[in-house]
Length: 250
Image 1 (tube, rainbow, N blue to C red):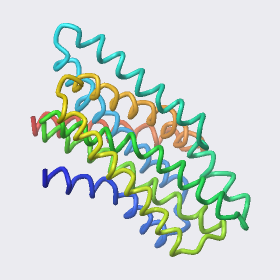
Image 2 (image 1 turned 90 degrees about the vertical axis):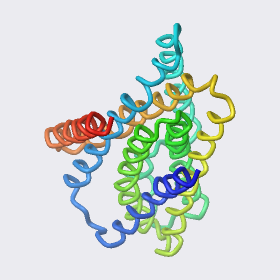
Image 3 (image 1 turned 135 degrees about the vertical axis):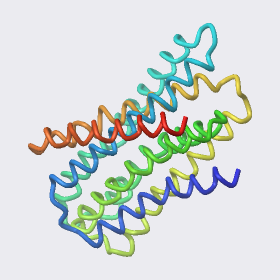
Image 4 (image 1 turned 30 degrees about the horizontal axis):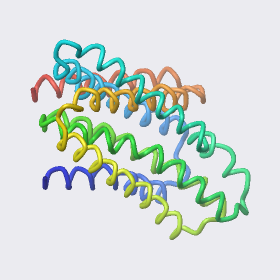
């Protein structure tokens, strides 16, 4: 339980760490940002496949593949529904907030809510990993999510400051989005711990949410600014590092 708590805090506050870096380097180059985010996408891709989807098939028994496919699509469709109900994360980061230097508090809260809601399934994925009982795989999943949170925390600072939000309130907002991920981690962990029968579906569901975030959010963002070649290789590097790590630690 102590390891779950430490990991939950690490996953949640990696966003805060990224925000701190964003304060120090407000003008990060787009190419650097794309490469870092793409590397994180590769790490998350490997973590989703090796730590969530394959174990889901194994734990599912006779109908493991069917349960896994159902869980993946349920997770993806859940995030698709979230995208329809709240502002799309990168649309908000790149456009609307920056376009209103005198944005009122309601717009800022909407921006924070969009990030927080997108972070909740990621936290659940980390918690489900621990609920499976495979600590090595769980740490790999949590590490991938935490790594993705760092550049996310970095890129939200500039738009919020440009919107007229004070540095203090901006940092508090970043902390709130991190706390949501901590809550999600415990939700996933306790849900699976209470009923191991839902473990295969829960693993696949978490894997589906991660695949959706990678395909819908991260890859399009890293390929939208002319840096797609470097971003592609960064993704491959991240994936291979996690693959080698899984074999060495397995």
